[in-house]
Image 1 (cartoon, helix red, strand yellow):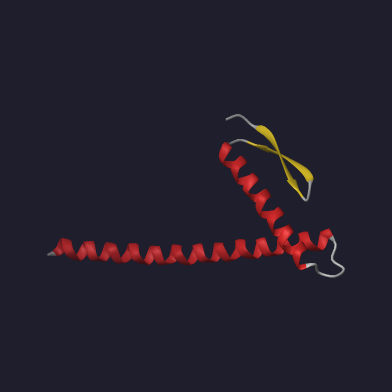
Image 2 (image 1 turned 180 degrees about the vertical axis):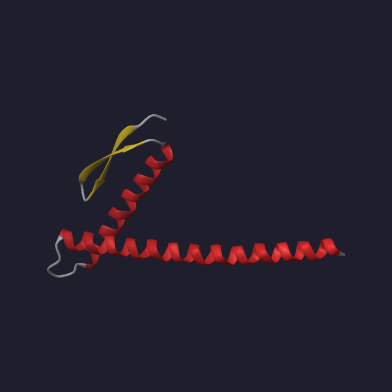
Amino acid sequence: MEKRTITVKIMGRPYSFTIDSEEKEELYHAAEREVNNALVTMHRKNYQGWTETDYLGLIAFRFAADNLEMRQQREVKSDELKKLEALDAEIDAYLHTL
């Protein structure tokens, strides 16, 4: 797929991106829905004195924290997988000696 431009809307404001795959387009539109849904949820809480910038800032913070948590979990799982692979290799080596 050749590069093309798509537009997503956050809070009704359009943002254009150049992408190079359908998968990335689907990802960007899913992200658009996530952000707008989070904004709707935050607005329902009706924090006194909050501006749109406050809402967007908190949403960005929450998404960043969730992203970091997922990275940490993936690293732990990667370490566990390495240990399992090493154990598997030891078991294979032992079985080949029998």
